[in-house]
Amino acid sequence: MRIELRRGALRAVTDTQGGELISLRNGEGTEFIWDGDPAFWTGRNPVLFPIVGSLKNGTVQFGGQAFRMGRHGFARRSQFELEEQGEDYVDFALRESEETLRQYPCRFSLRIRHQLLADGFSTSFTVENTDSTRLPFCIGAHTAFRCPLFSGERFEHYQLIFDQPESVPSLLLTPEGIIRHGCTEDIMKGGSTVSLDYKTFARLDTLIFEHPRSRVVSLLHRHTGKGVRMEFGGFPMVAFWTKPDAPFICLEPWHGCAALDDESGVFEEKPHCICLEPGEKKVLEYTVAIREGNA
Image 1 (cartoon, rainbow, N blue to C red):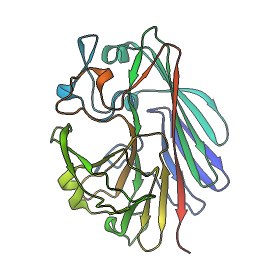
Image 2: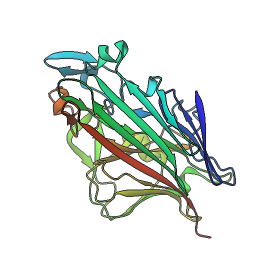
Image 3: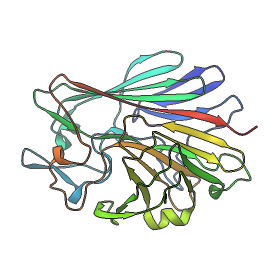
Image 4: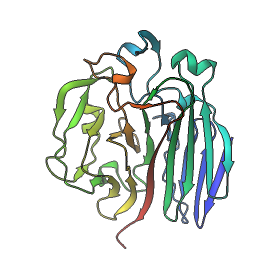
């Protein structure tokens, strides 16, 4: 079920399938979210839960028992319940089921709120442990923005601009999507800007930064200044991904990441895994603001 949100001139569309915000338009009708064209990628803004990225050998261990789970977990393919809605916000909820318990033997509540703001939107994730034992999980966003935004522009006309100079290198992946322990590449070189180039993504697949100084990154046209600004607050990682010649780029705040090639496979030992005691909650939020440019 799709639900439209309105605030001033802004319009958004959300979907109970995956609990996603799948459209954001400004007063001029410019669409900022990727439309899921299957010629490139059917995703739009998937929620990554209870894992981020790929598992080593496709499995993760709970209490010495191996469980299989697909890349980025099951939330993105799940039907969420509509919990609450207003003109400019919506709350979705996902809880354990027979299907999730086969992959992830934990009882949980995942609540997602999408809220329109004066110049964009916020998305918050609230995870609650409704089980009687510790709840380990990872979570992230995978928000795909149209790039380029306007006719006559090119992907290469855009830049990622961090709010701080960065010396943190990008983590590197194997062809199977596993992080190569100790292998990095210095993309930022002490600067704050990454110029977009399909060749970079063809070579590295995903740019992955762990513990950047910045809490804000913007996707902007290098001449007009138009685009979006994302604040990712309490997320310790941020990643960027696209496909060859695809007119979009994903900005991804993560609390967790793909498996390391030398990790144990025990869920609680995964990088940036969050563990909640029974009854405990964790809230994480990111915000997106539309940047109208230099004029």
